[in-house]
Image 1 (cartoon, one colour):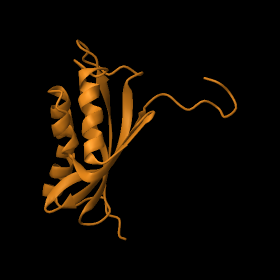
Image 2 (tube, helix red, strand yellow):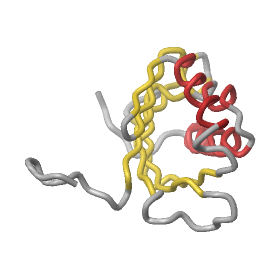
Image 3 (cartoon, rainbow, N blue to C red):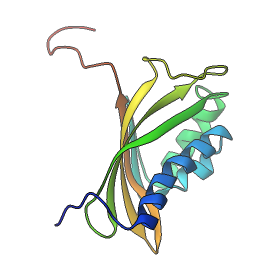
Image 4 (spheres, one colour):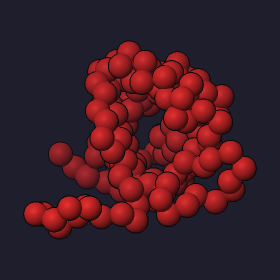
Length: 145
């Protein structure tokens, strides 16, 4: 497999646009719109959570937007994009969740994420998404906290 750092400009824009689709879906509490960014068998990993398949992702987000993420916003921007071929891209972003009234992401809510995007039937979708806290690290093995 050949790894390239850049693909066609139109594909770069389309892949980066996935982040905007997610931000817009979040802004409207739209679990359907968010889930539709994924492939049918896409995966989403958040701290403490794993969902596989568009329908599991949709169900999780509908509940989350009605509960813990109600009245929140999400923000993010690409920090790296690598084309692994004509139809596979690794995109990395930084951002986080904003509570109502916040304009800056707190260190506690800051994330870095990896998006694996694939081109299917001429459209870019997420095959896998995972995020991690940007400023927290795992505790030393054998210790608590």
